[in-house]
Length: 475
Image 1 (cartoon, one colour):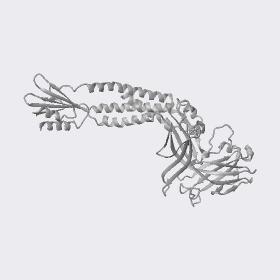
Image 2: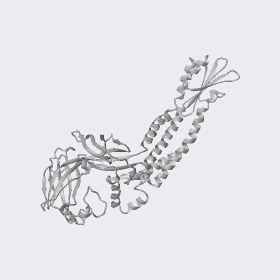
Image 3: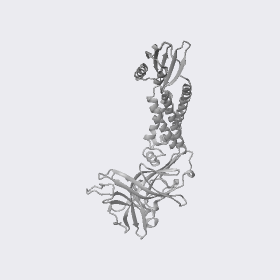
């Protein structure tokens, strides 16, 4: 038990780096950003599995040692408890008055004495001198609950291990509309993590289209509910059903669960370059706050014939309900007075540089080197308004669509973990509140009797319980 407690403590300590440092399995972009911000420290942490704590050899070693320790703790105790259940309570000691609790009394009827011990495991014995002894024991559920509690930890560890090996997860930002539907393939996710035993071909076959999203807020801006509607098909286009899901009620599909995480707005922009070629894009603005004031970019790399030096990008802020104050802040998360403030940039967007970057931000390296320059003054647009740039090209703010971020997860060990948690909740109260104790009653041939009691575990209330038994025997 001491070893198991030490290993539980070590497991908790080992999990601290996984909570402090960004993890590849949770947010690969955050790991990349950490590496850029700490170029000297990041390689050292990477060699120590600092960004993959939960799949590191040292975390697995603690996990397996704890697993082994629990088995070593439970197995002998289980065998001992099984023997205790088969073994009847021992005969009464010769001198009951030496026990922690004892009493002298007269019991005329053995049957009445046994009736008082209803619910106790009672064994009757008769001695050669005619003395009858009743040995009774109660509280076996304490050890059973203790074993159940420790076994539940073992079940939970098994479930977590199965989930880590054969589970997977992925995240994606998805916009309302059939043109923004995606299928359950790795190429269509913003980030993902696969268990060691999972390959791309093992993912469930489904495609998801976000058909609607509804958000409700109180007048102070605090949220009431978020509800998304989705149409699900398979990769062959066969319709599998229409579903709704919300923050605490995920969409449960065969082989995966879809969880709703965040939401915001995606401005729809139509750009016509100086040559008269029109392009339209739906640009999710992902960096959002509680009032849904959000920031993002819209890029048109094919503008002006695809000339890298004449590509167009827009960096902006969207406000669903602009405040009357001179500052660009939103008063309310829903669209009541929506405005879009954009700054144009012209030049090489850096999309073909071969360097990993975010599609939701302009490449700052391109701006710092001067390959991407600010183009004109910032502009405030309302829905339906058009902005004419210095070269005669035009940008129209068509409207907005709503987006959500979803987490798609498959954990084959979750049901095992659930069973383990249920067993834990059943076993813990039994182990805490169960009390194992024994009482003996000697019925002498002359009609007198002696009683004695012994608590097998710490039990402050045993004296009162024994006194109650004696009083009932004396009646």
